[in-house]
Image (tube, rainbow, N blue to C red; front, side, top):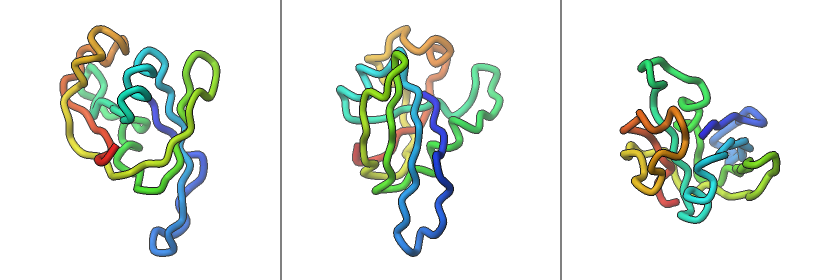
Length: 110
């Protein structure tokens, strides 16, 4: 899953909302059906990825546009912040390079 900010958060103190774009592709049905987002913490070579790091910036109330199969297929509101979590077992081999990643993040309360 790739998470990109669509607008920079101006002020958390003011309760401003950030809009995010999530490329779900192969894991779309699992994530939307399960009411969660999941992202690995690192690339398969253990390198950092800004899109994965962005998951830690999602806050309650932020809007997430979920993209898959060339369409915005869902729009959601984050219910929590990112928490460490293993790769969901329902992904199986879905997600290509995500298959090698065992540890990741998902927003709590999702």
